[in-house]
Image 1 (cartoon, rainbow, N blue to C red):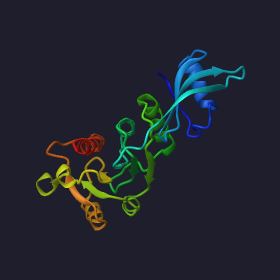
Image 2: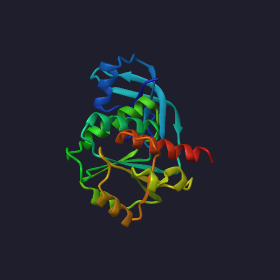
Image 3: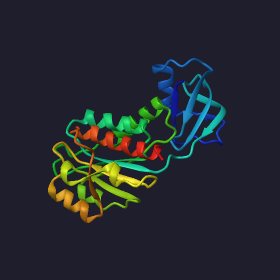
Image 4: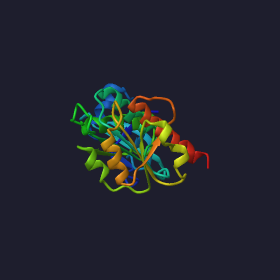
Length: 236
């Protein structure tokens, strides 16, 4: 089934006019047929199922037949990933984090970041595309910070960890984490965090942890941390 997205869609809209971008995508890209059954989601837990009808002015109207409402998954898992030099790798992580139902994705510039610009609009488009592909009813919150210091001082509820390479001197994240608690994990850039960043994180109550003896690329480490924490909660 093809899914479409509009954050304005609600259960009070049995007939909903798709925005211009989604209407064009339905007709010109997906070649949806008149009265074909599709899904429409708002990224806030609501999915409608129904028929899509096209108008002469090339607009599209979604006719709801049934609704499905899903509570946001608990606990809330936040993954913070440093801005990577290779944009494709960072976008790959964002896509997979949406599929894996992360609650929030944080992107930030670290001390070692080479390319400072983070294209928030492009990242959001990737998130929406992944949302529609996966059928995940909740779109993660996207937060972007210009510096490590700005990010580290932002409010965070729950347990806080910084995944740092020296395995011999840090606890594994699964041994440190208390299940069923909200959690945030910081993942560094290529080359890892600087010692100054680790010290600053510790000053803000982040606990250093490892992800094991395997050495991951930054984006793989971020996804591994997400799945480790999800598996720890599923095992309850």
